[in-house]
Each structure stands twice: as C-alpha cells, then as structure tokens.
Image (tube, rainbow, N blue to C red):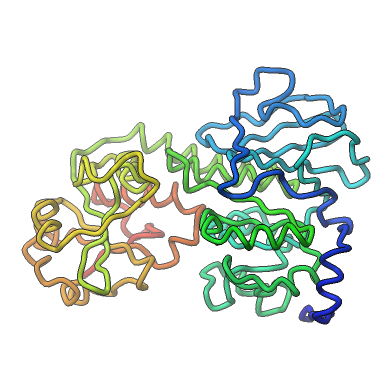
Length: 402
C-alpha cells in the first residue's frame, strides 16, 4: 500500500523546528561545513591509532579501517562495540551507531549520527541507486530525487510504483514538507548541490543532515564502483558490498592479464545543435578504454586539472581527429541513443567517411548506462571484447550498429 503525506504546512514548519529524529533519523546536528564553505579534511592512510579519518571523539576505541583498492575520496573506520565512522573528502563524517548502542558523549562538532537500521534516506545522487539495488537495500531509500519514469533501475521504478519510495523533488527544488514528514535521516546529494547551497541550509535548518557523494571524482574507474563499500558500511551490508565490488575487481585483473591492442576508440555524442561532445582525455571513459586494452583517439584533449569530463567540438575538428579511429562508440546516455547506423548518419552524415563506419566497427552504449554505476567493470569487459572481436552476443552495455 502506498505511503501518504500526513502533515499540513503549518505542522511542517513546526516539525522542522522540533525534529529530533526517530530510530532511523539523524541523532545529532548537521556537519560543520556545507558545499563551498570549507571544512575539507584530508583522509590519511589509517596508520595512526585515531583511524583513517583522524578520530571522532566520544571515547570510541579505534579497531581498524576498510582497506580500499581504488577509491580515494572516502574512508571507513571501525570502532569497538560495532560503531562505524564514514568520512567523505569534504570533511563530512557520519557515525553509525549499533541499534542498541549508546550515543557517545563528547563527539567532535559536526559529526552526523545515525542509528541502525539506517532508513528513510533521500537519494538525489542517481548514480548511487544502482549501488543500493546491488546491496538489496532499496528499502533504505524512502525519498527519490528522480521521478518514477526517470529511473532505468527496475527496483527503483517498482518501489515508486508501489508507493514505498516517493518523489521528493530534484536537487534544487526539494519538497521540504514531504521530506520532513517522512522523517528523513540523510540527504545524499552529488556535486550539483553546490549550485544550490540554499537547499543545504534549508535541509539542515530542519535537522536533516546532508552528504555529497564524490564517486565521479575518483581517478580510477573502479574507484567509482568501490563507493558501494561506503554505502554498504552505511546500511550494514559490508559483505554484500565486498562481493559485488570484488567481482568487478577480479574481472578487471583478468582483462589486464589478457591481450592488449593498439586499436583506437572515439567515444562521442552528437548534440542537438550539431556539435560533437567528446570526453576529455583525463576522464574516466578514456581510462576505461585503456584498461580494456585500447587507446582513446584524443590523447591530449582538454585540461586535466579541470573538473569537466566532456567538451564540445565542431564537426570539422572531430572529423580531423577521429576519422581514422578503429572503433566509434556513440554515447546514448543523453538522448536515448540510436538504433541503427543509418540513424546515426542522419545525425552527422560526414561520419560516412570514417574508417570505423566503412569497416562496420560502430557501436552504441545502452541508454541506461549512466544510472548504472555498477556497470563500469562490465563495460570495460564489453569494450575489451569489442576490441578483440569476440563475445558480442554476451555484451551487456554495448551493441553494434548495423
């Protein structure tokens, strides 16, 4: 049966002032600094007794830290008694308290405290939903920043259709009344929220803490996937997270041990105004191509210090740089993709002169890929098989355009 909103506007503002949190709600004040307000904390190697995040106070006794393979933008520390501290690169710290555990006194300022089981999350960072799905933890998410029809993740669509997950507005226009009425424990945002700092202030004024996930800032593609271990620690499913991550890490190790090629790949998208959008050379997609055994056609494109992942170029410039690429991959994540080579040529007829078109080596990603953060390892495998001309029938996120 669907969930219902049960609070009026006046009660909403009263609740915002009085909210103290239930068993799954936040048990402390918000973190000390919001987006753009400073407060960034370096994440060390965990060699000190205080733990990788530098300690949390409250008399907690440090036991050890999660050993990360690729991720650089979070840390997970474990303390005696089943306490878990999650630290994000901007200094946000979340202490997860055991269901029957005492809330430590004397915690450092700004630490967010959540009690297990962690529930009633407001998930705005759409790439994270795939991780909750892989953890079988969709039920921890009560509020979505995406409408039902916007999800390509079936479990999320089903939860919203059943009324178990409610649309609470996009990152810049959240439904504060609904969020408070549902006793939201934590808002999980991506960096888009930095454009709307007033939203963070408003959420925190109602006692709802905010965290930003930085998976897109990871330098290694599997660093993005490894964020499932962060969310596994958040909801108490470390074993499931480790299994899901380890499968992709093992697959990558196998790919790296296999045959390498020097074949070149162009990854692109035709914009509505006729420009060609490509990835900067420092972006994770060119790194995926390299890990798969190929070479991105644009070797030194863009500013490696920039946070941007893409840039637009004129068709003539793309023609000059990518005409001789061995493979073309069309990125379908923005416009829903194309179904045939003819349809692609209709968007940009000069592609007909490209080597990959003439040799039948034009591919397209499936359009749900951008939401499926757990697809990265499998997409590397697909690209590897594409380069070697094998396993086409087993590909998951790539298909050949005929």
